[in-house]
Length: 451
Ligand SMILES: *[C@@H]1O[C@H](CO)[C@@H](O)[C@H](O)[C@H]1NC(C)=O
Ligand SMILES: *[C@@H]1O[C@H](CO)[C@@H](O)[C@H](O)[C@H]1NC(C)=O
Image 1 (tube, rainbow, N blue to C red):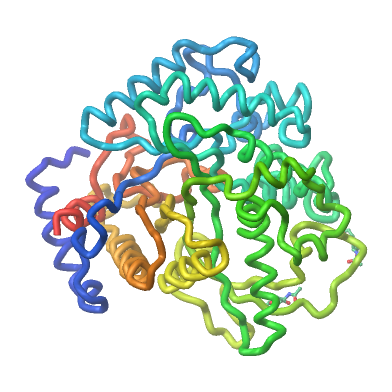
Image 2 (image 1 turned 45 degrees about the horizontal axis):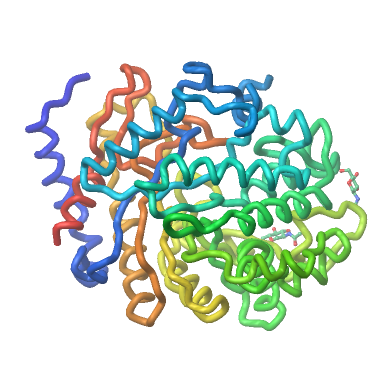
C-alpha cells in the first residue's frame, strides 16, 4: 500500500481541519506558551522497539522468556560490543539530528541470567550489578548523554511482576492469579526496596540523574473524608511508595502502617543516601481513577493489590465515568489530572524539576483498516493538546516542569497488550515490512512546536 508524500500533506490539512473543534475548546497553545528552555520530545523503549532479540549475541531478558513462554547478564561477565555499537550509533544519530537523548538505564528488561542466578530484584545482590551496569553506561555514553533516568516505572515492575503476576517474571499468590509461584503480600515490597536502593546507589556522574515514575491522578469518589483518605492512600501506594523514600529517605506512613512488617527497613546510611536522590523527576501520566474507601478488608488473602484499602474505578456506581473511554480499559481521558498531579507533587515533594516522560493514548489495532484511515488519529491530537493545556496551567501556577515527551514516537510492542494497540504518532505497517507513516498527530506536533 503506497502512500506518496503529496497525499500525506493533504492528510495533514484534513487533520488540522478536523481538530479545529479541539483547538476551540481550549485557548490557543503552542511552543511559545512554554518556557524557552522547555524540552519537547517523544519516547521509546528498547524492548518495545528494537527487535533483534536473538541477533548480534543479545541474550534473553525476562520479557523474552515471558513472551515466548517458554552470556551472562552482568558487566563482569563481559560486554557485548555489538550492543555498545548499536547504542553509539543511535546516540550519535540523535545528536547529529539536533536532538538531545534522555536515556533510561532500566526499563524492565532484566537479563534472564540474573533472574536465574539469584532471583533478580528479589535479591539485594542486584544493587551491585545495577551499579556496575550504570557505571559502564556513564563511562561509555556519558560524554554525549547528560540526562539519565535510573528506572522507568518501578511501580509497574513490582506491582504487575510480583503482585498481580501479569507481567514478567509473572509471580503472585495463588489467591491472586495463576502463577507458578510467588507471594503477592511480600515480594512486591522486597522488589520495590531493591529497586529503590539500586536507584539511590547510582552515582551522579557527568550529567544529571533522575527517575521516571508512573502514577494516575486519584479523585475521591465522593466529597467525604473517607473517600479523600482513600484517595491519599492510593497515591501513597502508587507514587509515594517510591518518591517518598527517594525524597525523604523512608516509605510513606500509610504504607508502613498498612503493610507493616512486610515493608523492609532502610538502614540509617541508606536513608541518608536516598534523601533527595534525584536531580529531576520523570512522571508518566495517562489517566485518573475514582477512589472509594474499602469497608470490609479481609485479612486472609493479603496482597499489595488491596493493601491501600482503596477501590479504584474509572466509572462510579451511578454510572459517571471519570472521562472518555478509550481502547484500553484502564485509560479514560482526564486531562485536568495532569495539572492536579503536578500541583500535588510540587506541594508534597519540594517542587522538583519535572519532566513528563510519558503521556499519550492508544487506538485499537484494526488490521482491516486501510493505512490512510489508520492515520487519522484526531483523538490523539485532542488528548495531547488538552494535556499540554493543563500542563501549561501547572507551570503558570509555579510547578517546575522542564519538559514533555509524548508516548510514543511510533507504534510498538505494548507489553502485555502486545501489538493489539497503537500508541505512536507514526504508524507502523506490521504486515508490509514495517513501513512507517506519519499519522495526523505527527504533523500536528510538528506544527505545534513551530507555533
Ligand atoms: C481467599 O482466596 C481463596 C482462593 O481464591 C478463596 O477461595 C477464599 O474465599 C478467599 N478468602 C477470603 C476470606 O476472601
Ligand atoms: C469497587 O467499586 C466498584 C464500582 O463502584 C464496585 O462495583 C465494586 O464492588 C467495589 N469493590 C470493592 C472491593 O469494594
